[in-house]
Length: 401
Image (cartoon, rainbow, N blue to C red; front, side, top):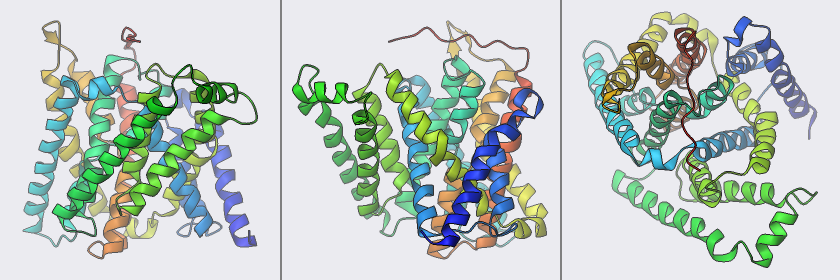
């Protein structure tokens, strides 16, 4: 490791270490730690003091952090909810969001120059489920009806834009991209079947894995990392976004452990939130060109308003039709909270804008504005939703283990 890379890594890890301490100094922990990580990245990055720079090694850590973020997101999802009425409603809502996004872009194109319309539309429909997970966990919402609904909209708002990006922004034509996704899906199904075929509970292999779980072998963690890296590599081989591979890894891990595994979850959380995920957020902040954003404040405001109208408003309307025992499931205040959380975006906005910039239609300046808008949603919208929910007690849903 050369000196420049070592120094950059030092500043990134220093920012990651002090972020939770700084976040804890804010009364009621109203500012999520994610926001502190992003701001720290801006400060130390190329557009700030320039004391941390990107390198192949830093890029690899960022990719691993992104992968673990989405593996945990896929693992935390209740797959029964996703294919149930809540998941179907979230999918229909996302389709409406995409239609509104394309319509809004078409309308704006009549009065101003817009490039990368498809990429912009996809970015506007995203929800940062990976970013929301630590926020929802910190606030005790994951096991509540409110939290489950947010996770449904978040899962669809993360997975569907990734699929749309792979089809519409891929290196192939849409038909070819769709065929590749189908082939990848079949490969993931084959991988998902392997544990049941070779790891029966009473087999010697399963016993070896269990015995090594709490030793220096850490077999369960190693196999989980293998699953993640294997599917991410497969996705890269098929030239589709690694987020799809990471999501698939999380789904497969949950299928393998349908009732969860406290020991493995604790170790994965330590690996993910102890190093790799904070590195991802710090390096994401390093990508934000603050000067470009400050030079065009009206465009930044427009991007935030578009996110609220394209993503937040349809979710707010959709949750009006959710029922529990014939009565409306959520109050107007709770629907507003769900809409605000669902509009929170960042990782996928970073992914979409990166692809669009590399392909040529989107300028780095416009990409910075979209990423900054996503970062601001992470700062403002969960905070606003938390303030709206103050004084309300969310009861956990009955366990269905």
